[in-house]
Amino acid sequence: MTEDKTPKIYRAKPTPGAKPAAATPTPTDKVREGQRIAKLLARAGIASRREIERMIEAGRIALDGNLVEHPSLLLKNLTGITVDGKPVAEPSPAKLYRFHKPNGYLTAERDFSGKKTIYDVLPADMERVMPIGRLDMNTEGLLLMTTDGEFKREMELPKNGIERSYRARTFGDISQNQLEELYRGITIDGMHYGPITANLERRTGRNQWIEMTLTEGKNREVRRVLEHFGLEVSRLIRTRYGPFVLGDLEKGEIEVVRQHDLVQFRKSLK
Image (cartoon, rainbow, N blue to C red; front, side, top):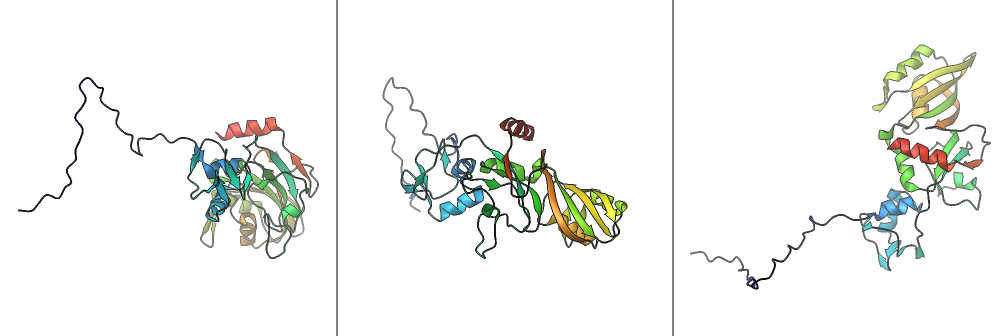
């Protein structure tokens, strides 16, 4: 006969008249409180969520002196959080700026090859801001900048379908009928691009300006689509991102968006 090795469980007898003890909650019973530390730090403008995850892996973020081990840590606020040993302040209301990115600058905080970045253009006393999306080094025009990493993420999410408009100066042969085919989307070298609205603005010989509006903003999307038609792109300018326009901003100039306009726009995203 095989001996039953299951350990016997001894339980105390209930005290006469006592109320049954409440069951100890299991981890799955506990209500999740607070928000992920990566989300809170992104809202505070420290960095994007992805960059914060890398900072945690590098041991740069601590809570009450103890290194944070995972970006899923839930917190109600940023009390006791330090980054590189410096306390983190609670996030202030998000700010949004319109920046006219000049041609020839990378949309990056730093470049180890020595290329100039947009931060070489921004004022030295500027508060920490992050770009919403990117513009290629040789693309100029409207680049939105924000102090809030969560707002940056909202603006970049494809599901929100926020429109971006561009003007491209091109050389080659193209017709309006060809451009209108883009409204059905197009696949180039295995990459599918969603609907694009494109219009010929004006033409001089084989040179023309083309205006394009899209929502996906995939890497080098405008250039790839135009080059697919055999066009050479000599200049590319982003003129609009959502309801925010380049307007008459001079190259390298940055201007804050009115808080009322920002609040109204964020409400439209929900």
